[in-house]
Length: 571
View 1: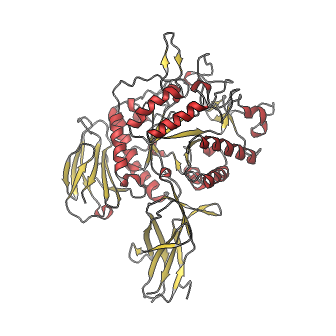
View 2 (view 1 turned 180 degrees about the vertical axis):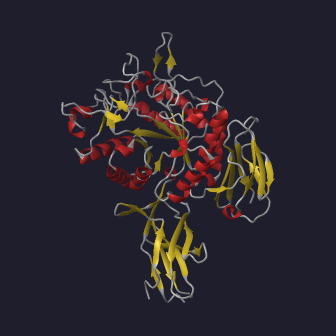
View 3 (view 1 turned 45 degrees about the vertical axis):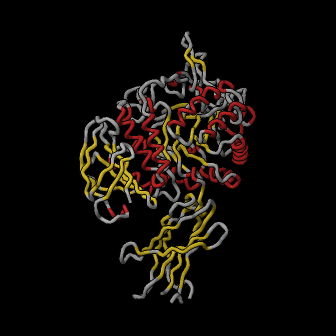
């Protein structure tokens, strides 16, 4: 008899409105499948998760186990092996299999690796190779001069180089240094105030070079195994060609002027936001055209500026349209906003999102938030942990202590498969615009930076972190993060395992004082028998024998690797 046993609460399953959208995955990533299955009486059940490949062929069955006796809640891991839309369903059968039930198919989208895994670095091309002249003016860097900086990015083993907008910058209401409304003639303007007589979103800022120069830059990056990501900011300056040819795309005030952008108390007089209620299809088609142009130039990654201020349905349609044609294109959501909106954008199609990691500092905050993004929301929300951005100088970095910079980089690089760092972080840049503000003094958004790269730098440590990430598959997965108890609120411990690759991480969250504690390893989560085991510290090169209850001491003042340990377990 079919449909004999009730199967319900199947997970993961993602709804975007009334539409079931695929669970996020990459090829060879384990997805934990769960369902509640009940049967009357006391006879046994066989419960299996069945995986169906993109061709509609059942490729394997995974026996599901009741993970807590008496709950009737079963689980198993399924693992798509190739890129494409996969499905799974749950089948419950009696033990001579004469009675059975099947759940509905649930989709899984196994995307390319970059949708989940990447070490990101951000720089402004105009600052790379910029020169300070004798009269105090600064000559802008170009794509040609920025090519030399690619070697610095490659030496730190970053996979992705993200560029803020590279388009012509408007002149109307141009902002000056530190966001002043009275710029000088030499102020270069904010890259996000896109557009002037030289063009808009489909054009190159002449100060940076030509389209040919950009194409050469992308190819130079590819030779170093670096992918170039571009900013996609749906807004424009008053000088943008859109403002002249498509006034229907904007909000018009009663006096006939176009309304500029505001995020109270901040005002952006140099930027016009789009009104999507005026011509939704027109903006959708124009965005598709612009993205296609940059994809044709070799760009496959886009960081989207403030997507939460645009209709979620717009992104669902646009990203879906792009990914159907270009399945390896990745969109990163820059949405520092309410959780529900961030999650909605993930369900709409964004492969990754910025997160609240930037402000999570205590052991409790980090444990709670990292557990949320790795276990509770990973079906539709992929986190990218950034330690800083041009907009955000977190309070905890404002001391300038090298140990806090190292510690935050270590957390970001080992907790999630994707993390990011904005240029200047490795130089410990830390001066705020004013007390109580989380913004940089002399922000690069408003001026060209000429940095002294001969100063002491965190770059060797960052390079080692990214090397360790590349060499250990466990650190390239999200859902495998597990925390382990410690007796100190200043020391956090967690593990990641993928097959035979088991990594343990211990971090001192106190950037000033030495801390010591006992770590109580959860051997069920480690997948080990409870006994002593051997580890190699991938930061220091030392080897140890660890016990089920390990005493550790971490001193920020010690030479070498003072912020913690990244341990590879010998299996």
